[in-house]
Structure formats: C-alpha cells, structure tokens
Image (spheres, rainbow, N blue to C red):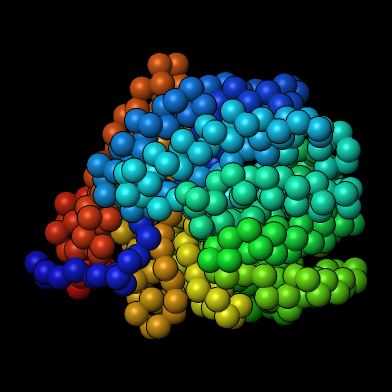
Length: 440
C-alpha cells in the first residue's frame, strides 16, 4: 500500500460550524420559532425544542469534544433575538452568556469565528417588515455595534451574514423559509438591503476593532449544463450568476447587478477581508419549457451519483476545486466555512470527507489562498424546514435524552486536525474505498 500524507498549510484552521437557532434551543422570540408553530412549515411538523441545549449549558461538553478532537477553530452564530429582544431593550445577560461561550473556546485554545446573522431575526424586526424594509440596514447596524463592542475582546473573525443567496432563494422564491413568500422582485429588494447591511456592519466592525477580519459566507452550488444544447448552457450560466455571483460581486465592485436593474452601492466596494465558502454539492441544469416557476429549468444530479440520506446532496468532491477557483476571482483569502453531508449511519461521510479534503489540498497546492475548513457540523442539529430528518453531525444526537453518540467520522476528523493533513493510513482505516483514488 502506498504511504504518505497530504499536509495542509501552517496555521490552517480546522473545526466545525454551528448556528444559534439550530443548537441553542428554547428561543421563542425569533422568526424560526414562529415558523415552527405553523402546521406544515417543517417536515413532519417537527420543532427545534431544546435543539442541542446549548442555551442550557451543553455547549461546554460539546466544546470539550471539539478540544479533545484537536479542533483549533469553531464557527458559531449569535442570536439577534436574544441580544435585542425588543426595539428598546438589550439583554446584557444574553451577551454575557455569549461572552462565556467565546471565553470557553479560547480557554480550550479554539479560535472563534462569529456569524452575526444566520437566517433568523427577532420577531419585532419581522413585524416591522424584516429585510423587506430598508430600515433593516440601520437596525442591523445597531445590533452589530452592540454585539461587537461587547464581544471584541474574545473574537476578531466575523461573518456578517450567512448565505444571503440561500436566504433570498428560500424565503422569497421557494417560500420554505420565513416569511414564506414567492416574489422574485421582493427577493431582489431583500438582497439589496442585505448588501447595504453587510457594508454598514463591515465599517462598524473595523471602527470598533481595526484588526478584525470581516467577511460573508456564500453558499456555492456549481451549476453545469446537462447537455451540449445552447439552452442548457445559457440556463446554467444564468443560475451561476444569479445564485453564486451576485452578492460577492457587489462587495467587490460596489454594484449590485440583478435581473431587473443594477444598484450602485459605493460603501459596499471592497468590504470583504475574506470570502467564506459553503460547499456541499453540484448539479446539472436542463431546459424545461414546462417549468416557468423554476426559470424553465430542471436540475438534477447525474444518474450514477452517490447521494445523501435525504437525496439533497450528491458526493461531488471535484466541486470543491470548482468552488475555490470560482471564489478566487474576488481577490481575497478564502475559508471553507461549511462542508458536510447528512448521513445518519456514517456510511458516506468518511468517503465524502476525505475526498473533499483531498481535492481541497490539491487546489491549495496550486497556490489558491484557502486558510481553513469548518465541517458542518459538530452535533446533529435542527435543519431548518427539514427539521430532524437530516443528520450532519460528527456526533449523533438523541433528541429525547440529549445523549451524544460518537460516529467514526468524529475520530477521522480528529486525526486530520491533529495531523494537519490527510494520510494514507487514515484513508485505509476509515474510507478504504477511497484509497486507490487518493493514494494510487
């Protein structure tokens, strides 16, 4: 058997990513809690409930797991609805609890990355129109100022808004996120407000903390034509531009280009110190004249794809290379801020993990500046409109007892983090089917 190790760059960030609503539990003051109360909104009418009970203190044991597994970084989000539960009130106790979480990470020698908006807002913000109301820019700015002022001694790596492209698509085109509208024009207005809110947040953070590094996390989904026909090629290019390109280009150039018009936003130009890349899968696009509601497209995985439990993620590790090449055009360092697969029995995950990391290593060794990798996720959590049907955790979760169940991939990822690399021995032990491909 061939021997060897693919080593990553010095000071590479290794860890997991989480989001407040998905792990904290018992937050009854945000848009997702309200959404869960409406029948039919969540698969199987599931509710987040205690989630992973981080608000009850179980973050400590999960951070212990991360430390024992040699993670040196962790991405988490903070809930606006907890910190500002009403327009005229700040909850200092909530801020102190987040302060303790960040201190807890640092005590474990784990570098925190904090996301300021991860798909949820306070109910009072939604009542004022949420992201549809241009006032959201200043409302978000006030929250960012308060949160960063309080937490800056413990964090200098910030993500302003997670996956604005997914938020707009899911909430205003597909209608599966709150507020559940299907209005493209309204969605594009929301996207403009998110660009403006990011720009305000970026400048506020740098005023409060000049040494900070600030970016966004964009969900990159590779779209390729299903055939050589011109209609398929044109549609795949359209999807790439609308879904992948629009937001980060606005932060690079200060101009937001949409289907309908363009908005010049000078304050947004150059407001990324790094680009967060969330990559899960790619898909092929075929022209379908009978699907006007889906921009006349049919999107699917190749027939021979290995797919996740839910059928929503196909194992396409080469897409990681495409993702990083795409992100390089924006001229800033990159961090893989999410990557993972839903796999309750942990059958596909080891192969998915080692092959994606191998392709990530390959592109880094072609001098593409990638500084870290955050696996989604640490412990099974509440997966938005899909409830508890998707299991992404390195550790499983029994939602009735809150017991954590260690999956083999937790040990695999621990060895990768500890080594700062991927070895033939690891692959042979955890994903032997990948050995001929990775170590021929």
